[in-house]
Length: 121
Image (tube, rainbow, N blue to C red; front, side, top):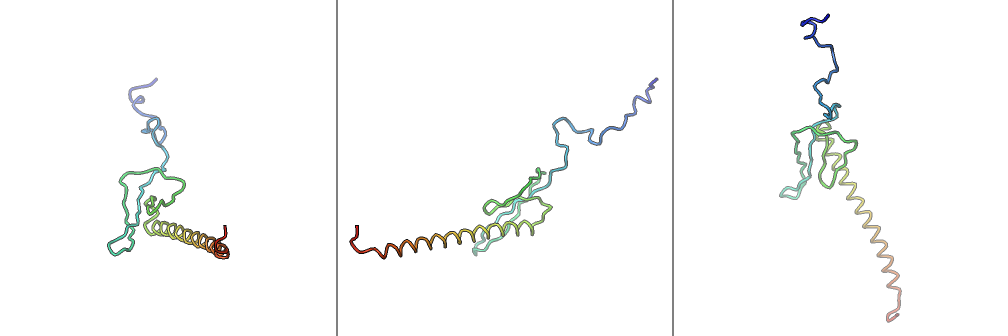
């Protein structure tokens, strides 16, 4: 028979007994930062960090977009700046490579046009 003393004692339950239905259970949230490359008055780039106050879900992949990079704070600013700069440098080198390739094609076409006779129709 249960007494008042036994009724007040709770049986051990799950660790997350304060979790409501639909509430996030897994620890897959972290503080995130936003890093931007901004030009100063001398035309040099500086990496500026804006830290978020709230925890955000951790994503599977992080990629810089333009001159901005959103990343988990635990990665550190050096890693984030290196990743951002490497991505931008790779993109700029690809642009230069594509432009040089296009210039070669245009130059070959111009050489063919220069071989044409004047007044040719």
